[in-house]
Length: 211
Image (cartoon, rainbow, N blue to C red; front, top):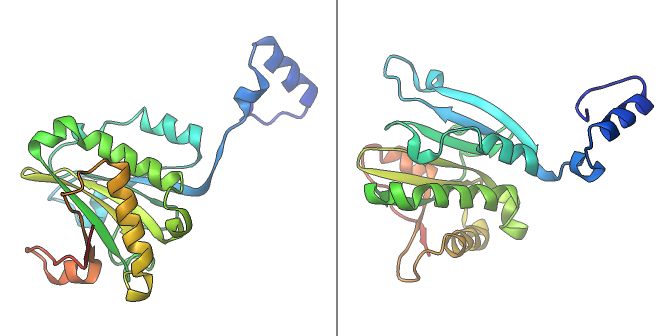
C-alpha cells in the first residue's frame, strides 16, 4: 500500500492495519546516493554501446537487496559479460565526464576463484560503495565493474580524479578495499589511470599506486 497513491488516507491506514503490516516495515532506509546497475552483453554483431544496457536504479537499502536477489550472481554470467554499478548519471565508460580524469583499483581473480571468491568480493565492493564506506573519500567513487572473462575475471572500482592532489584519497580507498575483502597483507592490488589504460590497449597499463 505504501507505493499506491490514494485520496483517502484513513482508508489506506485501515487497509494496512487489516493486512497486518507493521508500520516500521513500510519505512525504507535511504542511501546517500542513487545507484544504477548496468549489464554488458558481448554480442559481436552490435556496437559496444548497443551491448550496454541500463537495468535499474535504486536509492534505498531495501531496493538494493530486492534488485540484487533477483539477478544472476556475477559468477553465473556468460564469458564476455559485465555488471557495472555506478552513481546515477555516470555511465560505465572511460569517456564519461565523471570518469575521464580518473582511474581504477583493479583486482584480478583466476578461474578457480570464480567459484569461491568472485561473488563475495563483488558484493562486498557494492556494499562498500552504497554504504559510503570510504568515509570522506566516498564522493570520489564513481562506481565498480566486474568483467567475466575466459582467462581471468576482474573487479575494478573507479574513482573520479587520478591527479596527484587526490593521491591520499585514492590510496585510502585502495587500503579500505583490501581491508574489506580481507586480501592478504603480502598480496597487492594496483591503481591504474584510465588514460594509461586506453593508450595501452591490448597490453597491461602500469600501476600508479599499489597497496
